[in-house]
Amino acid sequence: MSRARVLVFATTLPAVRDDGTPQFVLDLSLGLQETFDVLIVAPRVPAGKRQEEIDGLRIVRFAYFPRRWETLADGAMLPNLKARPSTALQIPFLLGSFLWSSFRAGRRFRPDVIHAHWLVPGGFVALLVSRLLSVPYVVTVHGADAFALRAGGLQWLKRVIMRNAAVVGLTSSALAEAVPEVDAIPQPVIPMGVDVEGFATLAADPRVLDRIGAVQQLTAGRRIVLGVDRLDYTKGIPWRLEAFARLFEREPDLRDRLRYIQIAVPSRGARLLSQLTERRLPAPGMFCTTTVGLPGMWRPRCRPTRRAYTS
Image (cartoon, rainbow, N blue to C red; front, side):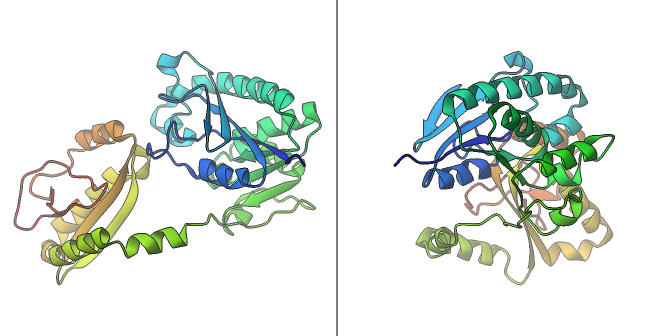
């Protein structure tokens, strides 16, 4: 008996596994692949293959702009637009290419259902393609598409997308108040899951226990402020460091009572380092490296100091 087919639309997808780009769409699709045949359609990104297969999951990436300037979908689209407003010029080209590539993929793949991630642009493309192929679609709301994009007719557009969907999935209860009100359409709250067993296994790993001991020794008698982010310019790390710098200027006694540890997965660090340079961070004598070998720990170069803390 043949398996049902799911055509997935997304705008954020890693070029390769663990490259620092959020990969929840990839993980969710791999989960679907255990029961369904799945094909993902996503924009082209640097280092990403035009077509590939991961554990049986097929991915088709479409070009939408000359490769040299094709940056809108490299990571998260809204932060990219905020950081570089000129990338807005790529929007109509991305939408046109997204629609055409999705329609072509749908005609060949013949899906039973379309699963779009984000109301805009994925949900918008799903709305049009579903009409052309006479296939129902579901859309998952992740947050940015609900809390942002409220100007002009975007709220109306999101409402139209939701009204025509078979199901609108919300990844948190807070999104129920952020999305437009739509009656008669199922809107289940389905939080993003985590690999509990995987974390439990890592927590018992002797190498992890050794590192925990090293951190405890480093921070003995001090409170810990822990940051866990992708090493990405969209995560506000420069502003966080600047806030700590101001805090220690106002409350110098906290330097001996507080340690800040930033654990970061490498991502688009080049632009982040540019932000740090512009804001003259890390401040000399305020932030410095550590010899504790935490995996993925960011180690900025700075002047050592007796009161330094991990960053």
